[in-house]
Length: 209
Image (cartoon, rainbow, N blue to C red; front, side, top):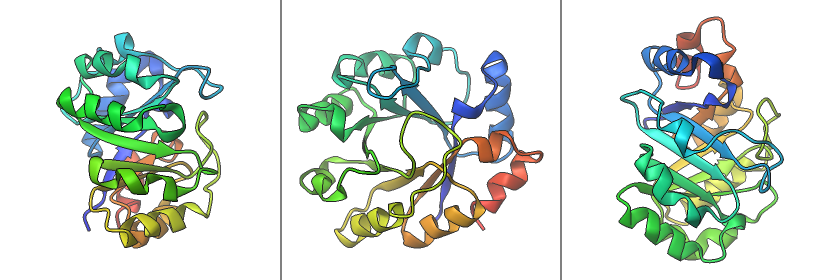
């Protein structure tokens, strides 16, 4: 399986964001992962659609909404250029309805879960999803250590017939990335491992070999 690499701009220099995005694109990235946090669903705060719309790149924008009531903001992020929108299982009262809204808006839909949420809860929704984002750290901050149980979640998804993208976010490096690939992941999200690397191109290559 070909694995795509999605650098998370949570670890980029926001003061020169488009330069940072261009740099990782040139280094071999396949998507740009955009972490949106509201300070409520998770304790950290990043930015919203008005800032995201100024990101200039030809790469797909993989938008991870770590926010309460994401259905209120789907249209804003679509208009800002999202190619994927991933919402949290725990944040949606009507998950099927939110996924349908995302699809109707013309972008790919995904769902994420916090590490402590049982993956079996996604079983009724697997046919509605383009992507499942396995959080291998607690959402909200970068630079955390990989949660080993994440591998079991990847394997569960593949064993239950999910053929869409499985993305893994948190604590990704060459070692954990290899474990995720072998389990069936198709997208690796990495923030500090790429953006803090001396050679970003080499960091990306290390995740796919």
